[in-house]
Length: 275
Image (cartoon, rainbow, N blue to C red; front, side, top):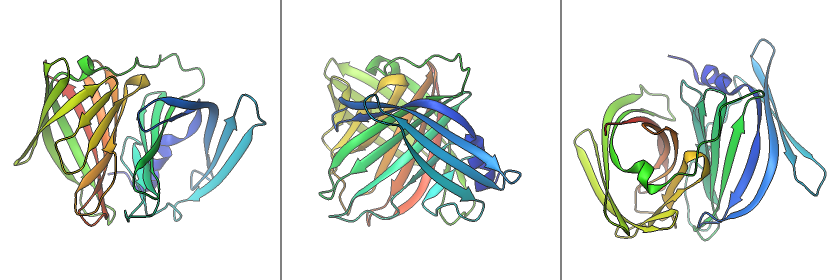
C-alpha cells in the first residue's frame, strides 16, 4: 500500500485550468484562469507548489506553498490513485467550515471547494477543472439527471485520520425517476440501506424530507456536489463530489462527519453502471 506522501506525488505536474466560483444554487459568479504547478524536489522528498491566478482584468497573482514528507497537514487524506479530500476537522456553529476535494483521471483533474459561512449555511462552491499540457482529453458534458438513472455497482474504500487499516466494501445504488419532478434513490452497503427522494429543480436535486436539507448540484465536466444546505450538530453528514468519467463509470469522494461535527473518515467510491 502506498504511503500518504507517495499518493500525494500522483498530483505532480502543471495543471492548466480555471477556478469557477458558483453560488449555492450552482450559478456561475466568476471564472478565473489558473495554472497550478506541483514540482517534486530533493528527489521527490519535497514538493513546491505554485498557484498562478490569471484574472482577465488584473495582474496575475501567485500563491506559493512548499511541502515535505513530514509537513502534510493532518486534515488531508490521499488515496492511492492521487484522489484526496482535505478541510475542517471539526464543524462548530458560528465558525467557517468546508473542504477541498480532488479526483484524477489520466491527464485531467477535477477539484472542488465547498465553503460554509459563519451562519453554517452553504456560501459558495468552487469548481476547478484542470488538464496537463498537451492533453487531448475533452472536458465532459454538463451532468444531467438522465446520466445518473440506473443501477450502479460500487467498490469503496474508507481511510481514517488515525491511519488504521482501511475498510473496503461494495455498494449498490439504484436511481429512478418516477415523475418529471422527482428522483428516487436507494443506496445499499454492508447491512445498511438508505432510500431517499429528491425534487428536481433544474440542475439541482433537493432532498427535503430529511432532518438536514441536502442538495446535489449537477455541474459542468460531469461533476456533482453533494452537501447540506446548512450544517448542523446532532446529525451525521457528508461533503461529497462526484465525477462522471464515462457514461458507465463514476467516482465519488466523501468527507464524513459524525453527529458531534467531528471529521471521522474519507471514502472513495468507484461505480460502474449495470444497465
